[in-house]
Image (tube, rainbow, N blue to C red; front, top):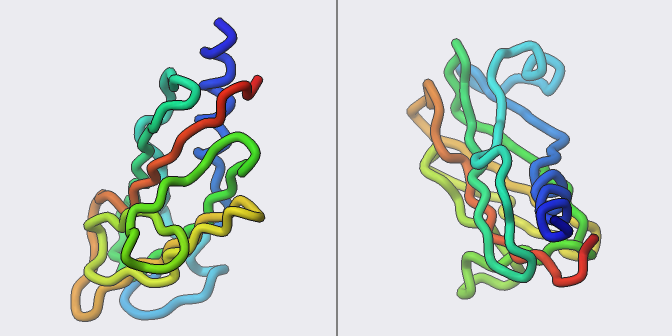
Length: 146
């Protein structure tokens, strides 16, 4: 049971997110973006994780009833509890795996000191409508987390 509680805690840490920004038919302000019905969510939304083992969480982006040509997310996590696994060993720093929602991804940065993941996706000349994978976070929880 101890691992089950720790597993839920680790998953809830990775699932917390702060900033969502959509663009509809061109660039829009953050204030406008917050009025849209688009959203980010994570899959799986819950589950049992084995401490010390690698796990994966997908960041899904849904445009709701809108179109989007760009999105940005910042995910907070506790670097004392989980380690983000680098998905691009040929690029300096640590990155997550971009999804297929947009044709271009920028600002793919994992700040392991402050526990922040930033990812921006955009498409030129096309818009996203519906739901697609925005990014994939691979991580490992540290043993001994309560």
